Amino acid sequence: MAQKPSIPKGTRDFSPLEMARRNYIFDTIKHNFRLFGYKQIETPAMENLSTLMGKYGEEGDKLLFKILNSGDFLKSCSDEDLLSRNLPKLTNKMCEKGLRYDLTVPFARFVVQHRNDISMPFKRYQIQPVWRADRPQKGRYREFYQCDADVVGSDSLLNEVELLSLIDNVFNQLGIKIIIKLNNRKILSGIAEAIGESDKIIDITVAIDKIDKIGIDNVNNELREKGLGERAIEALQPILSLNGSNSEKLEAITNILKDSETGVKGIEEIREVLETFDGLGHFAEVELDLSLARGLNYYTGTIVEVKAADVQIGSITGGGRYDNLTGVFGMSGLSGVGISFGADRIYDVMTQLELFPDSLDQTVKVMFVNFGSAEAKQSLKYIHALRNAGISAMLYPDSTKLKKQMTTASSDNIPYVAFVGESELGTDRFVLKNMDSGEQKSVSVAEAIETLK
Image 1 (spheres, rainbow, N blue to C red):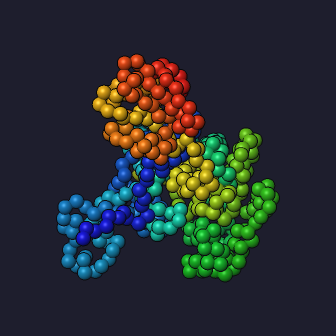
Image 2 (image 1 turned 90 degrees about the horizontal axis):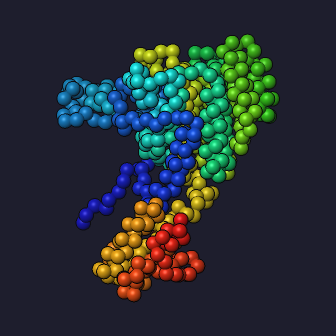
Image 3 (image 1 turned 135 degrees about the vertical axis):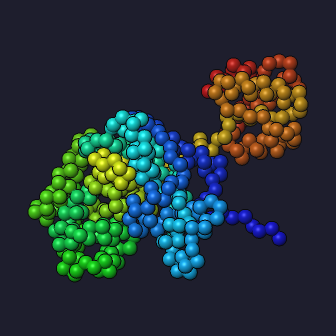
């Protein structure tokens, strides 16, 4: 018996309808990227592991898909290496490349590698798949698309404001009510300083970034495992549970971090971003969330996360400011800020809320029925003219029963059907039927174009 075909866990096939809906999301995002002045680039699906490793923190490195070297991938491994079962050491010898984990690190590599070909500030967007060896679950996949927009070569906080406006535009056009959560890594550094644990800033941010997933009690347990004392953990609790308006939270955290130069700087930055964005007017709800950490190590300033207001799902967009990412590739002093739309989660939200337009179900505007060889050849001439006028049209490929052809048109949600029968062959006219109303009439190509447009 032949083995039943399957695909790897955490990956998916997409039907024509699903692709139409996905492209609706991509097109909306791409339109706004261009509207805000971003230019498109692409990078390879795989990068050298030396490019990827060490950029996402210890947990991120574990989620990288490594690619075995071509040919004899064990040739660099001795018997002693194999018997030691030291996985990190073996991986370094057997794998030189890996699938990209995100689009930001490859972008940083791109900027450094092509620095003589681009002018600063450089605004780029990129829509490509990424891969993470994560545990698949609802809303979390091993292969998924990211839609990134970044600005490098500018320290201005106006870039953050523009990205928030871009986020607001996209989700308003898609019809999704969102909550934009904001924080600043300098504030988090100030908090670590205020509780006496400055040297454990990475452990703190990685842990508190999981509050929504595992709860505050489990976060506290993780902090204990990382070596934080009970006094520091206790001092952290009221900070993470601050509530009220954004201005009230800013006032409270300002009092807490008044002796931290780094913390005060972060408060000044987030206040400027909030006030400027609010001054523009926006559809989204905006919340200062002091527990927001976004575990990636390269963020240094503003951090952003977007949640759907009406659906329980993880972050559907995220990003932030990074001041030193290109430094690891030999180009220091270049600041950047960017966001990434999670297209797959956005798709799940829109499906659950039934937000996709009905028109996406349509594959073509008009289908010509096939009555035979002569009729089909005449139909193809009309189809050619319609396509040249920008109207999608098709001929049913086989001369089969009319009922079967009409069923196809109905199931494919084709709004019009055209008939070229024996009586229409010498007339330069054909019958056009509206599948919704049932109305049909004899038309010329020009009349059909006017009706169909």
